[in-house]
Image 1 (cartoon, helix red, strand yellow):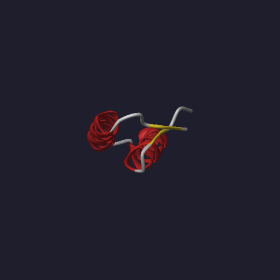
Image 2 (image 1 turned 180 degrees about the vertical axis):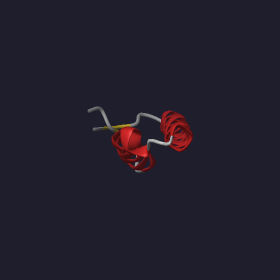
Image 3 (image 1 turned 120 degrees about the horizontal axis):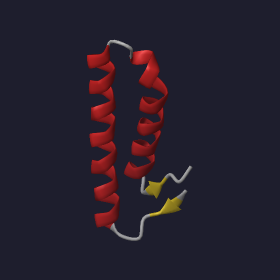
Length: 59
């Protein structure tokens, strides 16, 4: 993990992760197979938590 160099970068990452998480949840709901995307949802939630705290998860 690394710290963001500016607040704008952090805000952009938080928004991007929120949109990604929303899209994955929509995909899980629409396909009827939430187990297939559950791992991606969990990873997206972790990246969102890190971004909100000021870190960029690079794994």
